Figure: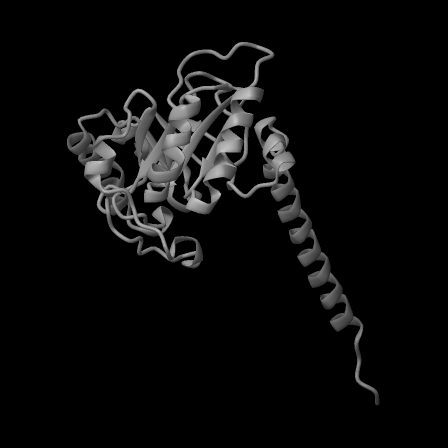
Length: 255
């Protein structure tokens, strides 16, 4: 069994909390890289660590703890914005208000034996909302640009906001990625050659028990819970509509 953890930034005041999480990770699971292609041993618990956006706080506060614990990780980078202040605000700017992205020169010196760089598009758009031709550019040019600048093969991709579609997944295949990551909290690497991999969202501030439950795959029921909720809300809307129609049909003015 394997769980891929999905972080964003690690603020200075949360570094010790992140360090405790990595200590718990190596105590309770076998750390593996997100580009793992090897079969997992039955009965073992594995975990992979990823970061979306490429925030500078990850390089400053998370990477030293990853080096200390020898936990491999992947940082998904927005290729056109190294060193910049994020401009996207689709879900509010609170979590990025004080953030800055890792400069390219600093990305080059991250330990390549431990830190994998993946693509997070050129500009962090909501991919399903842009034209297909533009999406192809975001996917392929971000991979090529990062590969050329860092002199690394860029094999992995994560969808900004977790927004994806079957068409976008196929475009990722066409762009040359070997694996893409969502934010659906499913177990990972059930097939060593899988192309679409789910992740569990984690914050350094998660309660210790909450983090341990995430490590052990306890949150993998969420996709089914979301689906059940959608079906229940649909059923309620149909019932409400039928009830309204019945009341309208039975109503008659007082004569």
